[in-house]
Image (cartoon, rainbow, N blue to C red):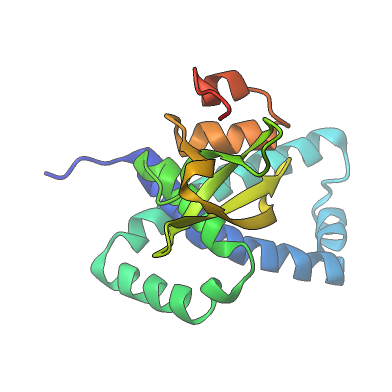
Length: 192
């Protein structure tokens, strides 16, 4: 019997559900449906509102987990792969978020955290290697804290890039928290 991996299923499910939910939330906000539904159900009190929020969080966790299980089936994988190739890959920032979530689910990522030296001044920035190029350079994405999907792309010579012995999760947390946790991320790495 195959073991159930809750973490993996949840993050793969989130990968499917989060873009859809963001789109639906925008529609709901435009139509102001939440306000009318809350009034109709009598959820205007603090207790009713709190219960609605708690229920929404539980439903979201269940939907993400269910979608994660579905995506791991043969049909689900093919369907999501087709959706990803045709639509989602064209959404700015999708690939980096997708790979980060896959990295959390599998404890690995195709984007490796690095320390990138942009000048000779002894200053370096945190980033991830997007590609290793044929001309002995790296394409490095340097996010703008605290947003992991917004930043600058640099092409750097190999000697200006130092791989970090850190996980994708450590990198994302450090950037999202304006550098908190950088000592764990850097370890004993020296700026070249």
